[in-house]
Image (tube, rainbow, N blue to C red; front, side, top):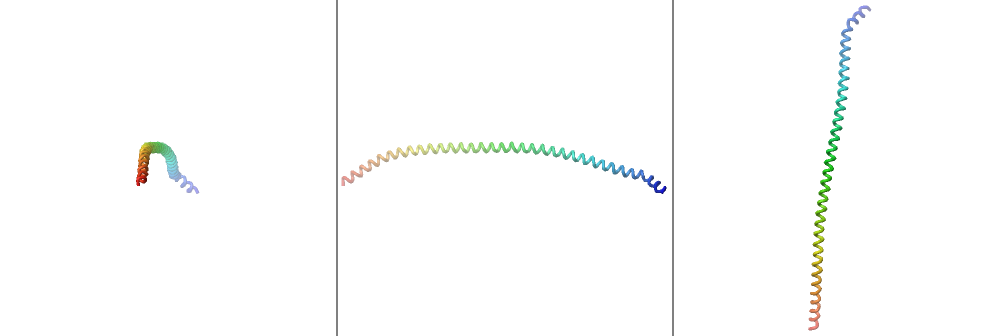
Length: 123
């Protein structure tokens, strides 16, 4: 039994070296895990800031596009109003001309009627 104890005592430095190596390895893994978690947090924060910036740019672009559409529609409606006013003026002029022609035609019809009656009477 003394030899076994003596052999175990001889192996203590090698076992201590192995245990020290394992301890250092586990310590390095722990530090790496902590660093990875901190890096992941930084990356997540940067990604969130980037997403917020992109959403702000997207929103401003959408507002600009909506403004352009509104201006375009406003211009189209203004052009249609101008066209409609021109058409209304043309129709009013046509009505006035038609009424004048009708009045002239009415006089002509009266003359034509009188001429017809005179022809009937002369036969």
